Length: 295
Image (cartoon, rainbow, N blue to C red; front, side):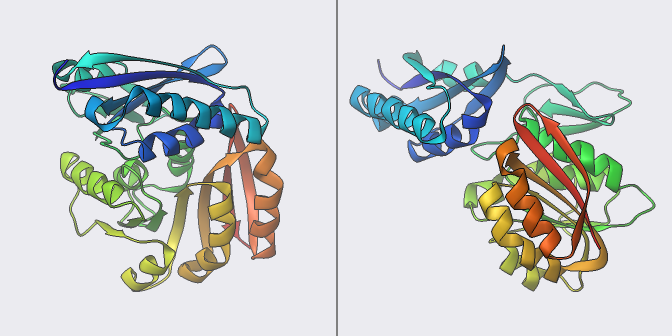
């Protein structure tokens, strides 16, 4: 079958989702979609046929099994089949539909026509290969936390560490942030954020996107920022906390997610050791979001 793609369907524990996305990225995945299936997640992924063979897919299945065993989680089930070139893009996109998030956002896939009127902010998105479609619990928690922190009167300057698709940066701008500095180590994420910035008609001087991490932010900003949003992984957040203090104002706020339930204590300890107070801790499924303020 010429110009064909492998469609993978992986049913997994929600806590395995980030690990699975990382593995898929290593295998050259060109599109993903996830949905809740009972108490599990169904992840669909698409990989060019010429890029991997059946033996590679079997190896991927074994890696996913090993990851689950190491984390003490249920072993995911993996199935795959071939689809035509014409079907691969529409196939994963068909499983991602408009979704309301929080009280103010409506996340809209870029390939669908938007409604003429809506009481919500319509945030159009084409994630490409970057993380952040609005379907993941951590993304939703961060957007809801931004609703509580950012408004038209605040004129906040925000830093987005690990911007992915740019969904949180764009959301902050829509809520009223004066400017957002966004960084990601992945060049595909930087590209996706810039593309979605254009898609949502956000000025490039309000959402500044560059490749890098917090050290890059330090060179981008003229003064300490009012708030930070960081939806990455707990281990990375723990390493970044001391540097986050260095780029924020004395009364700054922070939104931290990508943190599993059993990782909350080590994150909380580092947060408090670096002069921050945990204002609220939100939970969805197996994920948590810290709302913090500088003491």
